[in-house]
Amino acid sequence: LFPYTTLFRSLRADSAVVSSQVIAVATVNARGTRDHHRLALAVHSSRGNVTLGLDGGYDGTQWAGSVDTLAIDSSTAGSWQLRRRARLVASAPLVRLDTMCLVAHDSARADSLPASVCLAGEKRTASWRVAVDVAQLPTTLFAARRITSGDSVTGAISAHVDARAQGTAITAT
Image 1 (cartoon, rainbow, N blue to C red):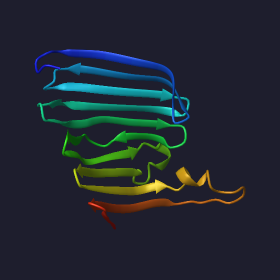
Image 2: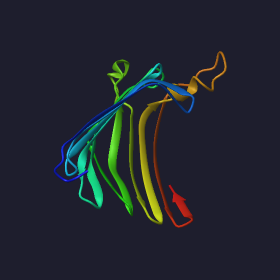
Image 3: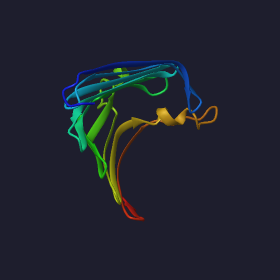
Image 4: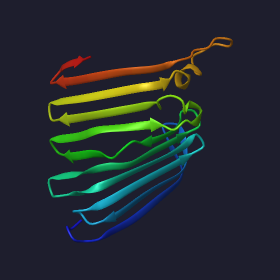
């Protein structure tokens, strides 16, 4: 793609299978020039929908932009939306995602803070780092698959994980 050539591409796949998950429809739309473009992905299945939007540009050595749309609508996990855009940089020696947070939209929990999952990470040639923050994640998202009849689990999970590796050494807190 040349710097000032305008790109507009749209791809659609019907009835695909990915890791035993049946995808009814998947679409990818790309628009713009090499220096500034937008990529949108939408996946629809019987278990839910995912939409992802990226906005940025490629300067010949790296792609820099942001994840500006991420929405998950799941029959088991509910509806989740991106809190705010997250900067993303990708090149041969580096991939870095600034903090990206998904927030649950659950009207039944209007009296409490919404559940959220945030992550940030960086991968370099010989190292990587990832940080994950989980807040008020309902245990019901996990419990239904592991609880025997008559038992119940209630509550929410909040946690922070910071992991990094340099060569073969991995540390986490």
